[in-house]
Image (cartoon, rainbow, N blue to C red; front, top):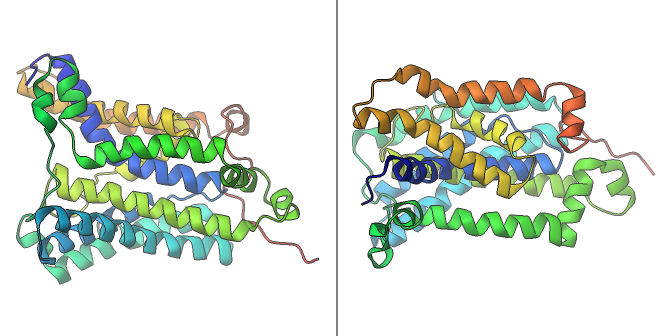
Length: 319
């Protein structure tokens, strides 16, 4: 393994940035449809606790159990997202209030903690964690080895999803329709696009991806169930969508930056470099607050090319 500190930071950035990217990609799809989802944290935690339960109770080979755990984590996240979609799209409630309510309802002291106690998932560690791969021993290669080849299967999946998302959003008719729904649902509706369907599908898809992000935390980074295991990663993911200008490729790079910041304190401590650990732990959240403050004004919202109808409920006019 390469001991260069820069290589270690880059490899750790990819490792810790992967779950943030999954959650951010889900939020990106949701916001592209015009729905603001502030309940990402709760969806990640529900996905994480469900994946731990699946890992402890589903019989079979390690790969089979891991696959089932990922799918169940995604399904749990999508169920919470479906509730958010119903509140925001069908009932047309305030999206900010609905998202915050979802986070409180399903978050660290809410439904995820309740299910963790009922299922007693915290009493033992995960039986089938998502392991780091070393294809052909390539992780020992200088520089690129630890960064590219010393990662999990979900990291490689995230790269595939990033490319597919770019193609979907900017090279397909369906992606064009999605962006039209986020920009002007009235115009999209007049063109025959089912606004409600597009918003429901992409909000639920966003929840499923957030659930996979939570699964990564509870089956890879820890790996066991701890209440609030995501430690605010859902909020970072929301800011990351803005940081990445609503583009999957820039969002991926931003996720790795935040991942590197999250791991920097541990790396420096392991090297016996004295630094304020609390400050380093807070840096991702400080950057998150800065990003949210910078884009809070309407002028910044337009300059960053945010979906024009983001957070605005749509009520179809009678014809």
